[in-house]
Length: 137
Image 1 (cartoon, rainbow, N blue to C red):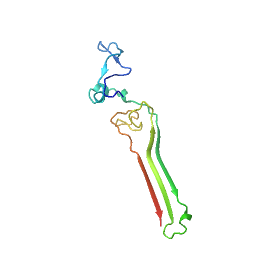
Image 2: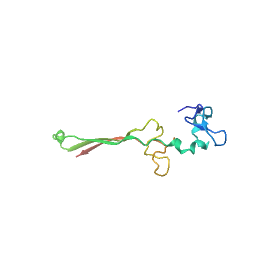
Image 3: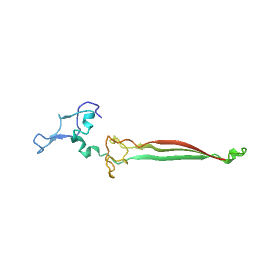
Image 4: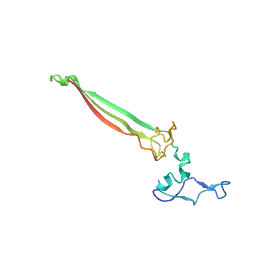
């Protein structure tokens, strides 16, 4: 998002009196790059709202297309009776809102069923693509 440069955290506020009052942050820069997203300092990791994203998504989860070659094609052969060709794919496409920079909303950062809580520690779901050829003799 900001590369490795220090940046002003959007919509942040600061307090100079121990939390009695807050004013918009116009000068307090955060450490940029990996230091900001690391486990420490914990101030960023303990604010769960930083990692809540929209649960909206559209997914092309699974597609399977088969074609049975007509039996008339094999009328003049004595050893092949039928052929079926199949192509398939899983997790071929996932659309998420632009603000979801992490991953698939169906995957969760927590060990519970907290859908929508994501982090930069998640990996995307695996995409599978394949084909099969079945022949009957």
